[in-house]
Image 1 (tube, rainbow, N blue to C red):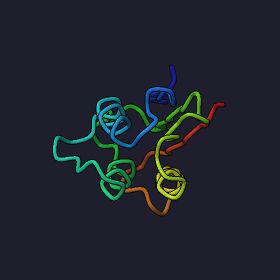
Image 2 (spheres, rainbow, N blue to C red; image 1 turned 180 degrees about the horizontal axis):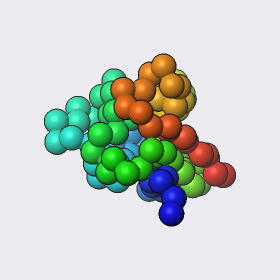
Image 3 (cartoon, rainbow, N blue to C red; image 1 turned 45 degrees about the horizontal axis):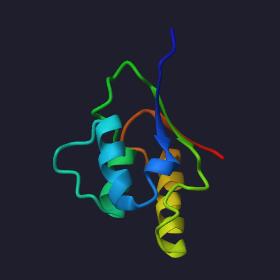
Length: 105
C-alpha cells in the first residue's frame, strides 16, 4: 500500500491563477479561509493538514505544463512556479510530509 497522495492539475484547465485556485484548493483540501493569492497558496502548500494523515508524501502532477498559467504575465507565472518549488523544500514544511511537484509537458 502506498502512502502517497497524488493530484493531477491539467494545465489546459489552469491557464490562469483564477482557474488554478479552486482546483488546487478542492484537490488538496485547503481550508475554507484560503485567500486565493500566492502567499496563501504557499502557506497552504506548506501545511497540507487537510490531507489524510496516512499520506506522508504528497505529489502535484501538472500535465500540459506548457499551458499551465500561460495566460498570466511571465513574471506572475514564474512567481507561482517558484511558490510550488519553495513549498517542496523541507525547511519550508509546516507538516511532516514530503511534497513534490511534477511538470509534464
